[in-house]
Image (cartoon, rainbow, N blue to C red; front, side, top):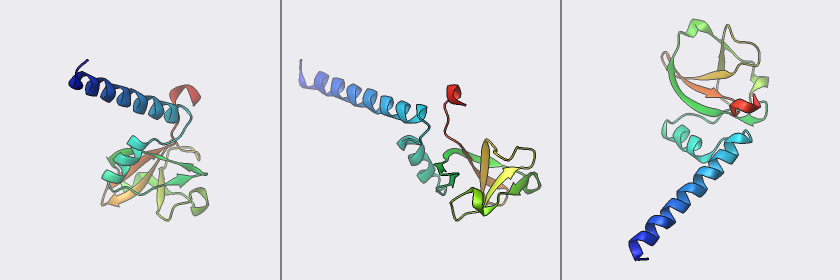
Length: 115
C-alpha cells in the first residue's frame, strides 16, 4: 500500500471514530463537541437547566410577547432564559435573547428513543 492510500485509510478511521464517539455522547444525553463548536462559533452563551447542559439549536426570530422569563432557580446560567408562553413548565425549547427579536434556541439533548 502506498503512502497516499495509508493516509486516506487513517483519515477515514479517525472520522469513523469521531462520529461514533459523538453518537455515543448524543445517545446518552450529553452535548458533543460538534454542538459545542457550533455554539461557540455563533457566540451563544453556555446554558444549563436542572443540572444539564443544553444543546444549541440555532437562531430564531420570535416576538417578545410570545415568551416568558423563566425563574432564576430553573437555570444555572447568568443570562435571562425564556420559554414560549404556550409551552409547559418543562419546555422542550428555551431561548436566550441575542439582539432585538433574534433569540438563541436551546433544547435538552435527548435522542428520540429516550424522550
